[in-house]
Image (tube, rainbow, N blue to C red):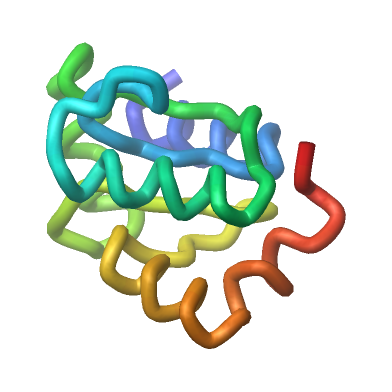
Length: 105
């Protein structure tokens, strides 16, 4: 399975996926920390996270997959949502909570 197919399968098989630097409990950049804290504020305590620092192919491949140049990247129900800034905006106006409805844990 190539990198793009691996990414496609991951975002399809998991309702919430965050490609980030580090992990939710130990984020390795401020943007990833912000993304993880926004998900927590939405009641999403358990989700599939991918540490892009552990795999250069995934780190580059996710940028190509989404056509988005930065990490973190959030996917909900297989759809690309955006990075931490977009997540913050969507959270502030209540749209992220609606998007995550029924997935809180």
